[in-house]
Length: 261
Image (cartoon, rainbow, N blue to C red; front, side):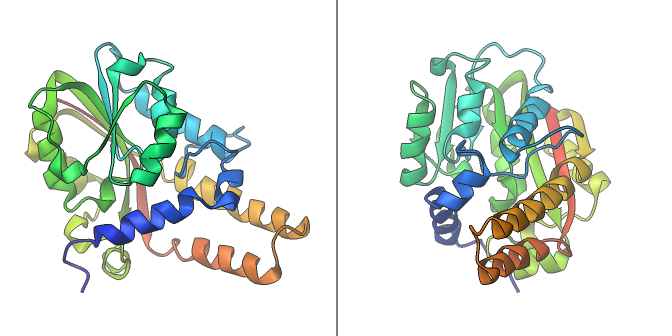
């Protein structure tokens, strides 16, 4: 049973490997994003989809004054996008990979980055006006404990916005970077958890079609185009498709979540 803590070293190793994988960077248009994104009807590229995701989440923050924390900031593509709305000194990013933080600093100069676990944030209470976390919260052990900590560190009236994935029990149990401790069966249960923590104005939106499903269609088409162009061997194509197909039976929902304190 995978009901114990996720091995954090495996999470870091996985994302560090992706950080230096040229094929992944090419797919994301050299942007250093690494999420499913949000595909409008006319979205053409994965990079554009990732920028759309940032727009979707930031639309929940009516007042973009003050400061903002980018939780699990990865290679800083999301952090760099925040600089469209915030001055660098008003943005803080945390991650647990020195390698990724090195890239993040290049992507978002002037931002204060820290090697810090989302589960062990050392910031004082009421430090941030807003927080954002893109496609990472399901790795935290546990999601609920992180959100309790995040609530304390938000200023009154502040918001946390994030994207999240809910998997089947079997998916949570089988995957090394997931845990059944984070299993939530449906949207109503998810909303109830957030309200029980103490968040107000909780919005949980199902964007499975716009995010995961359209990403799936885009990615599989991209892999075939790479194969036809001679950039992937038949074996490499099969491996990419196998990994993508493997998510289908496990992933129940992709969510856009907005909460205030």
